[in-house]
Image (cartoon, rainbow, N blue to C red; front, top):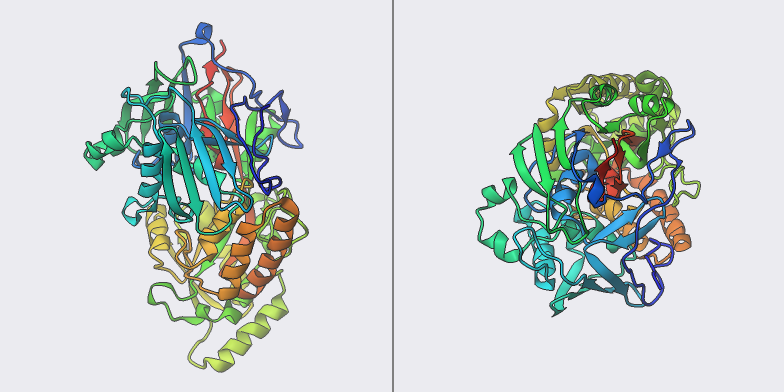
Length: 533
């Protein structure tokens, strides 16, 4: 009998087997506008071989080095096409399903997980995919030198044991019901140990060996990637050539979709997403909780300014009128919120964050000023130099200044802003969390626990760490909601970041494209895709 992990609601059972199964069903509503999600039951067959599918990317994959393609917004579809993944998150069914894996089982308390690989799966160079390769891959992600986007999650694995050539046992540092998310993301993109160790890292980053449905035909960094079908793909015949291209901005991407330059396009932002849905264009929608935030430096990299005081951070959060910001930026089309969790999330249980309260913000600012006579309200806000971000900065400054802050805006190219966030070189900076409803705990743990790979604020609060750890360990949906309510309460005191809004992503898919399936973080899987003329 086929069983799949229904993520985070039935994971408390002693043994949960995942066996191979197809994804999705008939077309379903993607939004209230009437746009539909493509049928996921369709798949490439021999009579559909040929054609090219071009996808417009929001940001290209920086390289094919291990651990770089976690998110669809940052080239995850490119790396998944070349490497494939051990698991897949099916957002329609709200469950993890196997891909390279044949099954995954947990013990009673979700501290030990046993993975079995499919038989007869080879990498594109002909070498078999083995348990040794899986163990080697997890080790790569645990190594800080790899700079993996999933290092924090990988470090939750205390021991990886190769039981036999097709079986791996993972022992975790503590209970984690959502562990499959590691294997459904870039942590599940298996790296062949022998081939990797025999290749120069720079060469590998441009021309890797994977077990995916495609191999690299050409690669121009930050411009274009062309992938051709892997004739030996374990999943069966692969139909199209894939081309990924960079088109600056979602509006430009959508215009390229409308003219037929691209057949698939990654759209981000309420206005463009709404335009596509109102036009009835098919696609896959993702609402990302806490997708727009302001990170507040709590003491990272030697910072000792006013935001090390949690009262100043609470004042910052109370000073923000999210509805007003949304009206200014999107004309009211966005999802402004002060809570960590989107109302559309299956984890939502009425959570509320530090709401707009100008008088409370002023009182806290005055209190801090009374104890810091040398502080006149000065705070520097770092923003990327795109028009939308600069407009966001202007709106934030006006609201914060009204509460008694004295905000200086600092603009920089987006690449510099990203680099400065990850080196903690900021006082306050506009950014966002990359959460997934598959397992919110993995992102919150990485952002709020000391040493987390996305803990950009430097927060180290024992109560917050305990709350996010309890959320991660909660075995079912009811206990997770309870733990998340407590996490929200602690967050409201600590405020390491101020939530502005949820972000909206929509991967628009043309009528001639069939067999595309979504996974984590708006990553698209093309192994079953084909062109229907």
